[in-house]
Length: 69
Image (cartoon, rainbow, N blue to C red; front, side, top):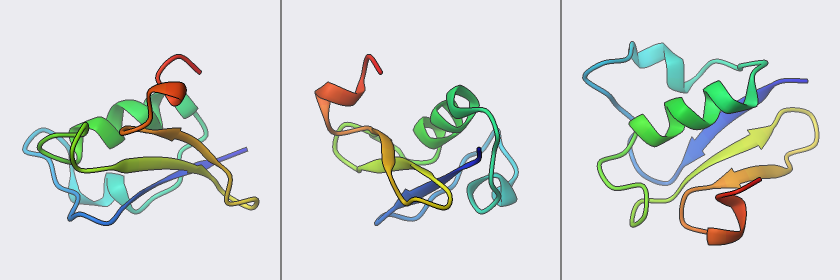
């Protein structure tokens, strides 16, 4: 199973290489950590981690119900 990062905002980080936001990751926790780093304010600038293949959103920065999954 692999995950990708999505956002309607530009994704960038001073501490991560640019390609981290376009590749697929097999570790959901790592994908979430990278997603959070991709926007200035994840509570206001939604960023999502999506399961590749199904398109299911497994984590969303702006939705409290996803925070503990």
